[in-house]
Image (cartoon, rainbow, N blue to C red; front, side, top):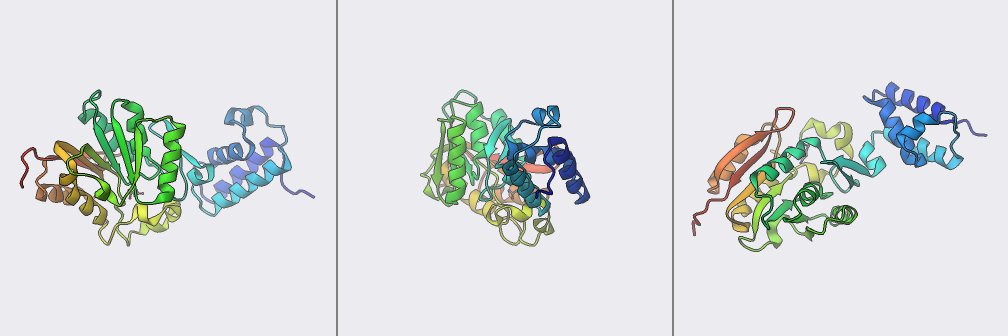
Length: 289
Ligand code: GLN
């Protein structure tokens, strides 16, 4: 006996209602994304074929996905992918789910750096490789180096580089910039963990399922940022760019840290929702030692 609905229209309606009852904001879209993943059908096909019945295996896969979603698992992990900068990126629970606000970091790098120079640009803590992949895609003349300490996340980044055919994206397993030589890059970009350890958001929504090491960095959220800024002058060529994503209230701390390291032209940029999101600076051209 099979108590589950089998026709596409019923499956969509039933799942959408269950997700809505659980307070999800886009229940119909979520239902369709998961039904697409379970059946291999496009959303347009789901809409066009309401009376088509799915196989028992497809129905079971769908039911499993709906239950996991109702238990809070992020859509991106259930689908195994997320769009970032118009690229479809593989993601896994070993990586942070790329956020729209991180596109601010990509955008400022595209504007600040010469498009057709053979630059070496570093993405520290690359995770799924989102920032490095977007820039490698936009700037074929640049060489992107994605650095990641977590080997599993680095595997996801490697998969993305391969699938997106980004031959100018290299990956390296290292704790921040430890593996790098002196004055070897033109720019350092990073979306490091920056959430304070006691932030209540960590117990809400998608964040509950994301790797804590990619989110949290000490009591004030600034441990990783301090380490990156402290080592950046060593790795950057004179005049090189350092740009770091951070929390809405952390910009003054980043500016002070950059100033203490002798950085120049320090400024903070806002994301599309108006929050201070990226602070950047240029490595001074005069060496202090
Ligand atoms: N912006 C993310 C959030 O608050 C955090 C990402 C990060 O720590 N790099 O959900």
